[in-house]
Image (cartoon, rainbow, N blue to C red; front, side):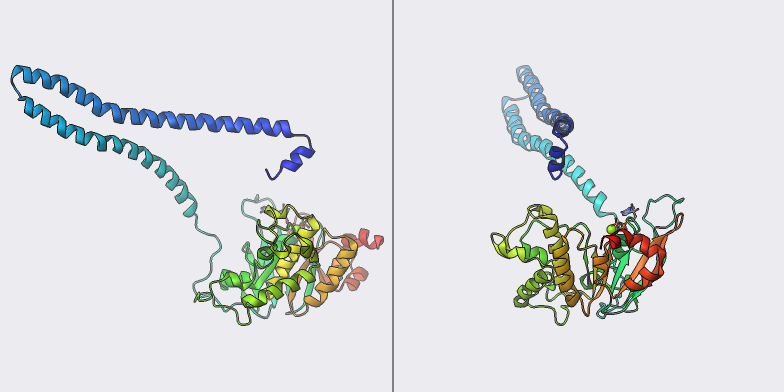
Length: 399
Ligand SMILES: Nc1ncnc2c1ncn2[C@@H]1O[C@H](COP(=O)(O)OP(=O)(O)OP(=O)(O)O)[C@@H](O)[C@H]1O
Ligand SMILES: [Mg+2]
């Protein structure tokens, strides 16, 4: 259903329907086989006691006529047999239900017995507050990549001071999104270490870490819920107030304050269009925000990251879908909003780089993993680095 627009636009409706029909047919055959098996099983469970009773009746009459058994004995035998028959038949039905339940339980156990790869340590360190981010000799490769391939990231070292805004620049597919995902431990590094406030991220409680590190992903996924619920997703109100493992952060917004936090975040992300939605912030948006435009979704995702009031903010190309004017406005507002928050912003355009105090260029040599090739301010790098100019140049000429 999600891809229906694409199928329509490319005129592939008939093919999609044909493939759907084949799968529906397979499902039908499977369901009918299942129903037949169950019916056969129940037939046996019903016929067997009935058959036995019929045999008993015939042989009973014969025995009575021979004078071996009294008519009273036979009558009481059948009295008992009829009482027992119904429960026996029910056992048949119960057994077939047990088989179905067993299949479902096996599936459940298959999934639930996979041990989680990323776990919190036994004794987690106190949650990060300052937001000093350090990457030291970080290497990373996705599992199941072929051994011949070099690591995706190989020896990335980077230091972002508390409150600093760093732009991360690379050519497409260079590994910037992957690098960002290592900071809230969406993946674990395969070598080196990521530290926040001097503590390895693997030593934090996962929930603590992820509540202090907010991320706006490059594909802004929104949930089928109100705008308010989407924007306030990362704020502390979701947490149990008296959970001893995750105490409320001091200074976390109270329920009254959340409204203000949301409004601020929406303003910073230039998402005032929310006010003109039919029910304002209470408007329910569709799955993945389907009723909104790409740029609107992107601004809501940005507002969501800002509203979480994180110590470390990770923005993966957050302005890519905006027109130049809107981008300028958001850049201005972000600049003042980001003061004091450590921010790493992936940028493909010089206008986004303008937000940053410093730029780091992630570069991949052929046959090697990506590493930081240059760091400096935008102007410095433009003057100094041929590589940086080649990544940024076409747009620079436009401007
Ligand atoms: N889950 C995954 N499993 C295996 N390989 C992956 C996975 N995610 C990304 N990759 C590969 O890692 C490389 C870097 O991907 P990444 O998304 O980090 O690039 P990027 O720098 O963010 O690109 P872009 O600038 O286009 O957003 C790509 O070659 C991609 O194919
Ligand atoms: Mg990316």
